[in-house]
Structures are given as C-alpha cells and as structure tokens.
Length: 118
Image (tube, rainbow, N blue to C red; front, side, top):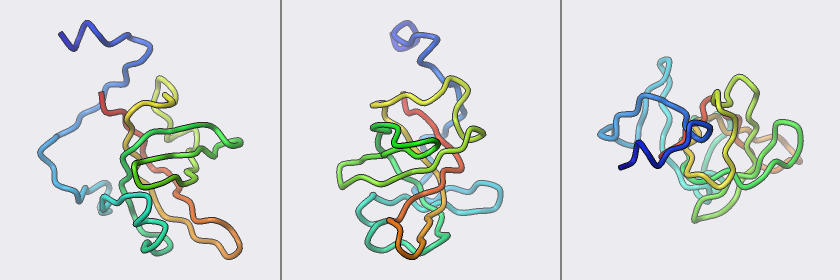
C-alpha cells in the first residue's frame, strides 16, 4: 500500500492532475516540458520550462545541480520555492522555472516551483 510506504518526513503534499499534457498554466504563464539537453541547445532567455529529473547536489547558496537522462543543468532555487519539507536529493522531481542566459555564464534555470513525484 503506497500510503504506508511514505514516511511523513519525505512527503510533500500537492495537487497534481496526471492527465494534464506537457503545457502547464501557472498564473497565466505557460511552462513547456523540455529535456535538459534541449533547454541547453534551444531555449531562449526568459523561456518558461518544465524539467523532470532529480536534484543531484547543492553547488552553492541557492544553486543546485539538476539532472535528467539527457544531461545536467544548474538550477537556482530560492527559499520561497522550496517545498515545506525541504529539498530531497535523488528523488524524482519536477521543476518549473525560467531560463537564464547571461553573457559569459553557463545557462541556468531560475525555479518558480519544485514538486516531488512520489
């Protein structure tokens, strides 16, 4: 039974409709699902993206390394975007955020929302 296998300290409740397609609406904005590789090679600055993968490790302050099967990318997660139970490394996670392209810096994503997929 799934409910008994989840520990309270590892559970972050959220509403999620699994029938929603790859374009999601949030506060009038559209988040398009992408692989990390496609974000790195094709995304534009300020583009809204939805990434599925896992948080690998903390790099510094509010910067984390996020990975999916296609690659890795830096993600900035402010305290107000962190779920109530904190960040769970190595757990299937979805991040909705905005692509940040700055001259002379690697591309990154500024997270608007972090969700765990239990």
